[in-house]
Structure formats: C-alpha cells, structure tokens
Image (cartoon, rainbow, N blue to C red):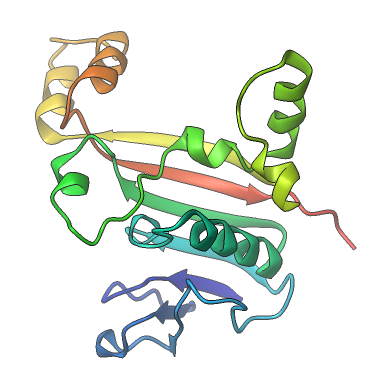
Length: 188
C-alpha cells in the first residue's frame, strides 16, 4: 500500500490519498494526530508527506506519537518522501497553520545508528530512535533554493559554500526541503 498523507487537493493515482478534511475528497478521512492509524502493521511500502508534516504535531507527544504510528505501519525498507517549507522561508513563517519546523537534523534524531554513534562520542543529541524504538535513516536531502538564489547560483555569482552560509544566516535562501527517509525494519 502507498499512502499520500495530508494529501489536500494533490491526489496521487495508485495511492491511498488521506486527509483530515473531507472537503478535499480524500480516499480516507483520517486525523493523523490520533492513534492508532487505521492501517495494519508493516503494510505500507511508500509514504508521501508533501507539505503536510509541518501542519501536524503541535505538541511533542502528538508529533512523537505520529512518528511511532508511521514506524508501525511502514514495511521494511518503506520509502517516506517528505517535502516541507524551509523554516527560514516566508512560506513557512507566514502560514498560521504551520506548527512545527521540519529539518533533516530533526529527522536524524530517529536514526538508531546515529543515536549509537552519538552515545559513543558523548553528543547531546536526543536519541529518539532508541527511545521510541523506531529507525528511520535519511537517504536523501535536497535543499531547493528560492528562484532568486537559484538564479544567483546558476549565474556564478555565488558558489555552494556561499549558499550554505547564507542558508544559516538569512531568510528566503531556501524555499523548501525534500527529504527521503527509509524505514530500517528487519525483514521477517
């Protein structure tokens, strides 16, 4: 099964399109902030959360509960595609329904291998993968620049190092982040 969670009006053919609001005519109306989700353990091979995750989990318990449910329904090696506005973009800051910044570093907290590495080195990172008994590895991250910064990069006005520095210090350099996670469940 493939789940397009928080689909809104962006339906995907061949996927189960899921949203909390019936007005967008999803295949299933589900409040993802309530557990348990209506899908069986290890039944989902692909998940899409396209401009959805930043709207969910305003409380820590709510967010972590959704991560646990995502883990439960994912099959071994399930692919999770996440696209979110960059937290330093006006697209993130101006929408009052955005309740949580989603970043690669924040999602890395759910990676058990990194959790173990941090423990060995004494890092202060929260080992959420070990604490929640979940394991999601980041497979790919793509910082998608705003048109202005993309144009500057293409014209050679700035290089990638300057872009990375600007993203740490300025708003509206990166418009959105596309992240691919993999559920690192053992095969049964």
